Length: 70
Length: 178
Image 1 (cartoon, chains in turn blue, cyan):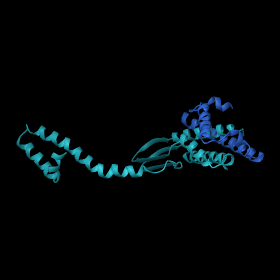
Image 2 (cartoon, rainbow over the protein chains, first blue to last red):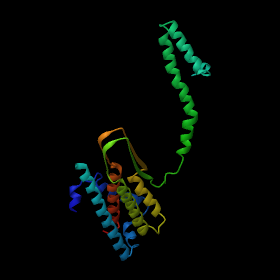
Image 3 (cartoon, rainbow over the protein chains, first blue to last red):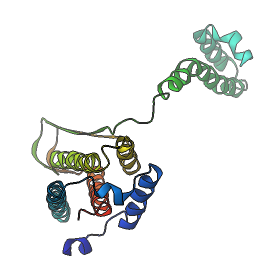
């Protein structure tokens, strides 16, 4: 959370959110229904996956910033 | 163009004419010059029309549902030099991280929307809006140089990674996993 405020994303999250929503809508995907497709275990796995990737991306950006400022 | 065609069979002869007259008379020089410059492009254009533009229209015919194509390559050659410092931001890590994010997005979609037929289409559409196909190649040649410092960065990949992560997080929030 802390790092999110320190680095400004070049694309506002809201834009992405609206885009995803519009694509879902266009293809007739309803988030409420989609939720039920996932088991609790899958949910947990995906959650971990996203958290892990997030961490890796942050690490990558940080390294980049470090080498830039050198 | 039709005027030019009569002369087009021998471009060499045309030039000979030009230079021949140049020596003889200065006042005519400008006249020939403009003639030369105007008609030459017309001739080439004609050539391109049949080859170039004809082919392009065929190539562009492909379907738009192409998967993303990304490449990131870096070549740095140092030859006959000394004291060269090369700092290369880890393109490889970036590329694999990007692939991982793409895969993660695909997994999330496949698991959640997968059984409905639209899954694949949604996936493609999401990816396509974010990134278009891109190839990033860097080639650096250092030759006969002393005491140089070279730093390379791949900005595109950093932006892509940022966007893909945002997309993944948005997706996951929307289907209520996070």
